[in-house]
Image 1 (cartoon, rainbow, N blue to C red):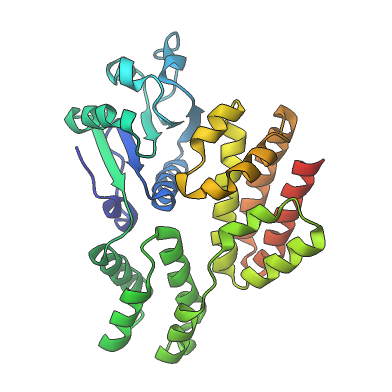
Image 2: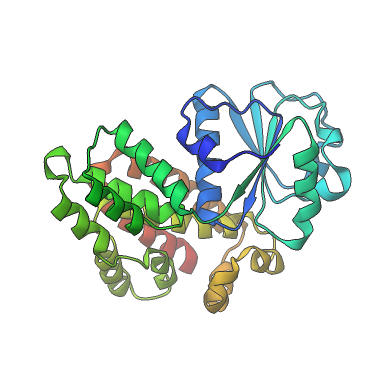
Length: 311
């Protein structure tokens, strides 16, 4: 069964009532957001998350897991040959995350045909999707806009989810008394793109890193957007077993930065990957819980990544 990604994001009462969910497409930020929302709600409901690399891992472990468990697999290794049948006896639910590729067409067909499965395809947001997200945001936060300003915001919102969310957060950060046409137009016309490029400053001197960070990161929503990008690159490093596997996971649009990313990856061993994993966990909690200090924590997070990478 196919499911609209906005049904997952905008419906606060949505529950994963199928055993299997495949999140695919080519819009990485939307894929990551949906995965994050599902796992967050699952944890809040008392469930636990376990990462898996292949469905082959379950060959000798059928029936050993508790009911409230969610298995998260990045990639679909084993699904193309084994299918979903061998997993149906296992207590728990499964989420598989896989960007579009030639090999995934057959797997998508299996999820569409299986009654216990959802398929969510994530692509860049069209105008209708942006309107739905904006309407939900305005209603939830009790914000009113005149018609002219409303359509201005619709046109300015980015088609990539992480940028759109960042813009909405900036509007919210204005505060009720400062939400007006002048201020909204000001924050949505500033060119503050390039936060993803901060990660590519890791091998420079600390002074240069700090300067670049301060130029690009000025608000709490900037920190959250920046953290997402760093987390994405860090997860690629942590989850890849070797250089070839790492190279296959690098998004196509980063072809110019590929050599740089290989250089960073080759500096990591198992010990460093564990340190990076701990850093991700502790930094995310600090950034979320100390919003008034998030700019400081964001910079500290970046410099700690550099320290681990170059040590």
